Image 1 (cartoon, rainbow, N blue to C red):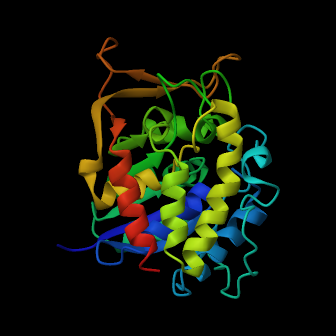
Image 2 (cartoon, helix red, strand yellow):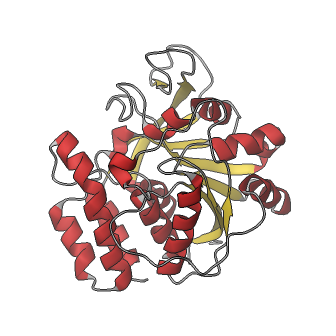
Length: 313
């Protein structure tokens, strides 16, 4: 089968880093056309550097990184140093990247890839705020129709939010961008907290990653060991949820996840619920179905895949 062409839109973030590594470790299935950085977990000045650090960690100096939006469409930027550290990628000490940041803006790159490839052949994988994607669709209203699908990490329903009682971080940071994307008509596959909270970095799973014994595995272990501390304390769990790699894992093996098709809308006006993803599981509103909303994960199968792929790097 032909490889799936993807653009990873990201704000690394340790879980973003694992998503990038999983994709780069899977060249038989995925062709990473490029990585676009956005402000989110940390300011853009960090996320574009972190993206390049991870490419170099994987030995993939050929993957081009593009800087995008440095703030949300409307709101002030909200970051998460309490989770990811001051750089967004605390944990291992990774060298400063030698590969250059591309001069082309991330939004221009996204639109160029969609124009240069046949319609329905490029998948967007946003695992941060949706600002870059929304800006691309705002600039070219026909771009959404050219996308094969958008496989995103964001949102929450039954789990509640992690930034507010109702809002997950990626959507909360730029709900106006999310609203544009969810109403774009593009096919959406959504990995909310409802499913990512099933995929925990338990001690046993972490030990398996460290036992690989490579520099990539050790750096991954150190990233996740730092990253899981916040959520372990917050939720009282063995390990923390590993959100963003779920998107890549689904592209590699859809059987690891199950969901339902439904309508999802984004709340942008409520002072209490801004950034909430309103999930109409039972089609109460009769609004158009726009999302495959994931609800279940084979967490052991996920970590089997992640561990096997990390061992390839």
